[in-house]
Image (cartoon, rainbow, N blue to C red; front, side, top):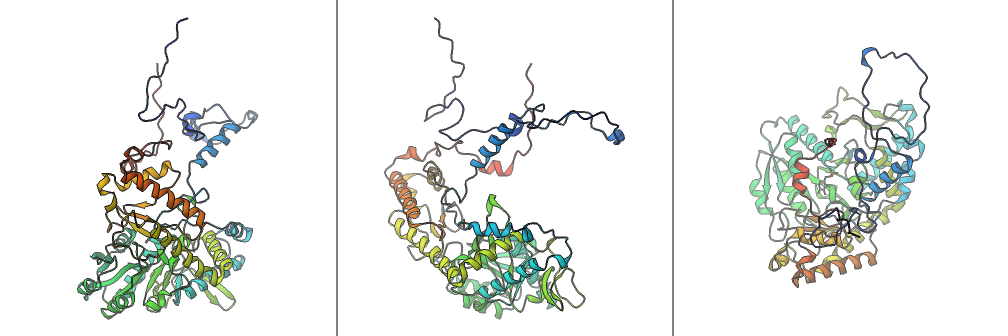
Length: 514
Ligand SMILES: *Cc1c(COP(=O)(O)O)cnc(C)c1O
């Protein structure tokens, strides 16, 4: 018998071919438009009885081409898609700066209570007294923990909170009659990209403050930049190198002496909750990422919330809406009232109710001692990783204690010819989501690891052992583990820049053959 010819000849390099593109039990899944057929449906509906349309000439005449699936096909499609999401519920998610910690299920149960989960932002105020009380209680916790007299709850994310704080600062400067002269915002080299973006959005120009050899703001250089044209500094503490800005009080004093404000990016508040209060350090405004510090799902997993605490100097300029104690209990102040100096409104509704419920649930279930311990454990975990890797991997500012995240650079990789990207991609083949890479920009080939307090010691030990194994491999010249990695993921290396710059968001039917 003549053997028929194998119809497929393509082979991939470096690994056995897969006929289905499935790998192990990691299943390939097409777009719903590719697998769906317009004439298929998961339900059996009778043909409608003849009726007269009232749409006039607006009636659609062509089928709209929605993809149809049977129920089992729909089930598999969405289950397979859900399995493509990496999540904190699946494993350690060591993204520095992002604080991917466990989201306690208690918070989820609280957020789904019908009195919180089912309310509508346009409901009459008299029917949402409990929600207003929750917002007020959460505000009280936030002011207590930060040592600040006021908080604006409406910003919807960290970056939105930055814009809110900068708008309050702009309004305060305008009220002093200095709007035309104070136009500069100072931003340290290590800042998150959202800081200069927020300052620019609000209409300020930015100047970069260099950092010293210890990875902290160079105080002398900062003082050299101060003058009557400076509106504020936007500084993260602990900073994005995972280091505590130890000159913080001197920085605050220098800013205030120069007539400028101190905006603190509070995204890293999770390292210092219960240890120190930004209000005591001279901060004028600081956003808190509820979705980082006080858990709540984020990234692909849900929305965020970025309340901004304000000093007495900035409190009068806070945006509406806000909750206020009135004659008959709490009321929601929706409009800028006649005698108010509020800068106005920056969001349609009050805030992210679901996030508020989750954050307060997290705070109350931890208690003051538990919140402090979470900060301590987050810092301990990061230092455990630092101490366990510092004999192999280099740190840009030397081996010194860190806060809640540890920053390595690529100096140690130099002799191997491999890059930070190669190292990070090889982690995927080991079943680990990579750490944050190439941020902050002050470190060459940065690798920023934030384990958070919610990983067990066993989990940290396996993570450390894996990174050590990879590091030895790299230094021993076992380059195939790295070049072209990931080898075992459903896709090889993607052109991430092109994907971000030219996203293909619309499916086009392939041209019919014949
Ligand atoms: C996450 C983060 C932000 C931005 O917060 P979003 O909620 O993502 O808008 C700003 N600064 C720092 C340092 C951050 O880590």
